[in-house]
Amino acid sequence: MTESYLVTGATGALGSAVAHRLHGEGKRLRVFIRNPDKFRRLLPDVAATTEIVVGDILDAAKMREVAEGTRFIFHCVGFPLAQFERLPQSTENLLGAAPQGAHIVYPGNSHVFGIPQYSPVDAAHPHNPTCLVAQIKSQTDEMLLRAYGNRGIPTTVVHLPDFYGPRVTNQLMRSLFQDGLKGKTTRLPFPIDAPHQYIHVDDAARALIAVAGQEKACGHAYTVPAVDSITLRDFSALIHGLAGTKGGMASLPSFFLSLASLFSTEIRRAKGIMYTFTHTIVMDGAQMKADFGFTPEIGYEEGIEDTLEWFRTQFGRHRGL
Ligand SMILES: NC(=O)c1ccc[n+]([C@@H]2O[C@H](COP(=O)([O-])OP(=O)(O)OC[C@H]3O[C@@H](n4cnc5c(N)ncnc54)[C@H](OP(=O)(O)O)[C@@H]3O)[C@@H](O)[C@H]2O)c1
Image 1 (cartoon, rainbow, N blue to C red):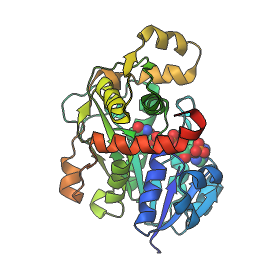
Image 2 (image 1 turned 45 degrees about the vertical axis):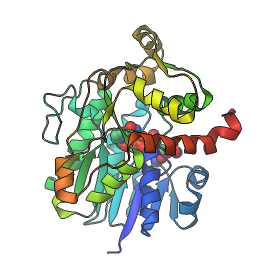
Image 3 (image 1 turned 90 degrees about the vertical axis):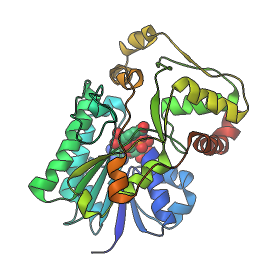
């Protein structure tokens, strides 16, 4: 079998970081995406030498066509919270499509563990998903790991902290970095004084690549920590400090979230995962270090500088940054 790498969701935060890194390592790369123009805009150098297949991951026949001949598959699609039910179907499509022996590497998160029973949380920590989105994520982790035992499909789940970095444009990160550059105070209904873990998305990509093709990783889950814990208030202050602007972060009363959640499924589901910002979840990196020599390397200052630079070049001209 050829050493060919497939990345799904390569226009997203993690998928683009994995594709970027694999490309830098000179790997034979195929990406499965919906929007080739977006991919070319985000990663022009990668796009120039990458096999781009366009389609929807919910299309099982297309998925079989895409996966053919691949040896390592990074399942990096992500769905808006309001469409999160699509995740298990996309995963089943991938399991049905993976060529024999191909290793599926999947990014888990920290939400599935619920409020930690001990710390740091390792892969043996029970899953205790307390909201629908975390339940679906947990079921998907189980579906993947069971596929190794029941169907002989090599799979690994790597639980990662929340991302920041270039091309991470979810609402929280986009607001923090754009407001940081503009010198505006970010006002969102997040608890901002509990320590939280953020991983630079390039470290997250490196963690997934570290386990790919490793026999001892098959059928197992791993946890990855961030370099450190930091409150949202301090994270925002660091962004403003490095951007050379005034401002920071202020928490809107949770009443705003409750009110908005009456009208929006997306916000209702976001409210469900707020426990990850009120309770600190620190994941254990010992097994990743022992098995693959992996540790996260990008400190907050370096990572935020890098992210500010990306936001400046991507949005500066259009948004007056
Ligand atoms: N974000 C975090 O902080 C975090 C932390 C830990 C783990 N994770 C996990 O990492 C994974 C990726 O998250 P992310 O934040 O990188 O996601 P993201 O930035 O929202 O990207 C999602 C990707 O999935 C693609 N996609 C969505 N629906 C699709 C479909 N029907 N067919 C094909 N592609 C589709 C999107 O394509 P378009 O560009 O066309 O929309 C995009 O490329 C998820 O499993 C997530 O749970 C995320």
